[in-house]
Image (cartoon, rainbow, N blue to C red; front, side, top):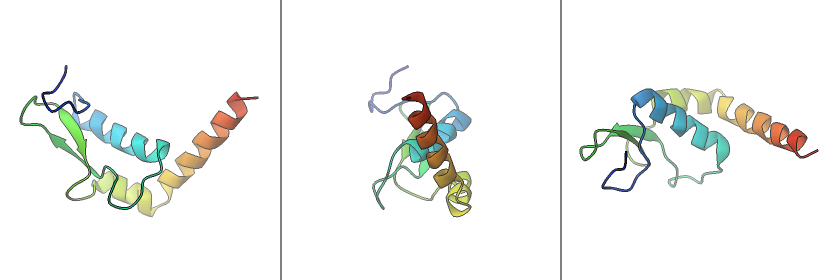
Length: 84
């Protein structure tokens, strides 16, 4: 499904939340320019990521506990070993 807003669609809140966390693992974001939450779109009914509003509680907890950083490091090592 495509959205008139041209944003990436996620069928459920849970899938969008996983995409949010995955984005934080995969990319280096500066303050203020990163997705922090999930919302249901009025246009398409699907879920999108947003960089505005409150930080998603699950993401916040993972950031505070260092889980995002650990997953980043694990991904880095995984990619390093794949290249050999």
